Length: 369
Ligand code: ADP
Image (cartoon, rainbow, N blue to C red; front, side, top):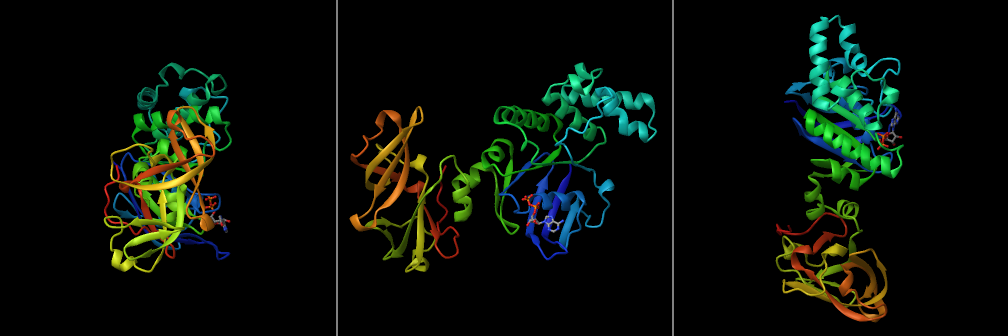
């Protein structure tokens, strides 16, 4: 099982661009890691540092416990370049898989055994005599990954491999990649700007922000339930989170005429006292009827969008002079009429509080799931 460790890794390009800031990441055998962030935030640079296509400016990179900053790309056992499906069109799948081994002068019977083993792992046994043009997209991807697996690579790097596909092909290719990863068990590091895609694929997600900063690393559910900062809170979830600007006064969060008692929510309400803060909750966490311990908020439904089973309600709450907008996702059978006034409830465990200045979470160890 392979093991990768990046310790305080920085990349500063010769033009002064600080593309990766103090990256710390440990990856264990078999993990599927997605690096997520908008274009230009440093995702590809991280992959290039791991592959050895760029030098690390400072910090340490270990492969299986061995310091590998200066190891040549060829010796790292790391494969890249699956975007173009990198297959030779004039060779059969068998010949494509065998190509690298043939160049190394390995015995024909050893090659045959390896090709059959790899084809079996990837479900390509019936395609070995076919040419790439007669394969489906998924089979092409499997064959391209097969060419890496047959060389015993430890790690596969995929840099936005689905970005040029339409949404239907993208969904199919995503399932294909997930299934290839399951059967091969090779560490896969994958970049995307789509957090939903990352959540569907990854064991753990690394959320990056422009400037090369990692804002949080964790399992998809960890990022959703326990965002460490406003950036990750805003980036996760199908519906964007509700944020209310206010301040902590007398152990309460106060904003626009609303008050929330903070007991059990902030780590240290004494330390939070007097601070500007942002209270947040997910639209889908609210309830209209519940026995749970909740904060109740009066609001007015402005207009609604029926999404099927659920309805997205655009509402306003707060005192007359300081109203704020909120989005609620409610059961369509219980959706309020447009223009009506109603009370919604936010379970205590679904309320988040962030320091408005540092943007870091202020909450205590609340169990949210
Ligand atoms: P992403 O993959 O998230 O789109 P990149 O890793 O490609 O981001 O780029 C991160 C930053 O580094 C960007 O500001 C980009 O302009 C800069 N950059 C990337 N490659 C180079 C390079 N070879 N020389 C100088 N700057 C670069």
